[in-house]
Length: 225
Image (cartoon, rainbow, N blue to C red; front, side):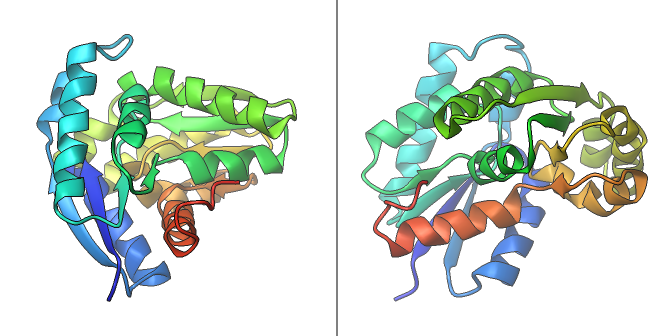
């Protein structure tokens, strides 16, 4: 029987990139989409640390996904790090953070890592997670983030072309980095435009996440490096 992977989305713009990644890398998996776009709307009203109320709400969302018979849970929004940590402790199936695999790949590229982000509230939690992976890897690395303020609004309005162009225009700010990460699943659609703008490795999250989730399922949840 195909494994059921529940995808937790806090914004609809993250759905297409991860579905495309599954179709390319693991088409045998049965994917189920759960969307609560109120999560991202309300998270944007908490620009600092995520509140306990939001954490509990996110965990309830994840537990509902587990109750659907999930063999694994993959989160596609990067603004909920502490809530994902709580969910990992709560459910007995593999739970994967959206950028975990991409962070590991970036650290392997070198010590100067850049990140192009489009959702401000995610930057703090992503920076904390990146530093955790750096410490775990035992090698020095620093993160420099450029926030492209208007790109997410354009994407939500259906203008992916402008979204991609705005992100690519800021990529040269990070041309001295060893690698550039596109922070969110939704920004992965700008990868081609960014690669045309800089001669630096450009990393995206969806494909790496699918590969790691598959490895976790096939090894019984033990495939974290």
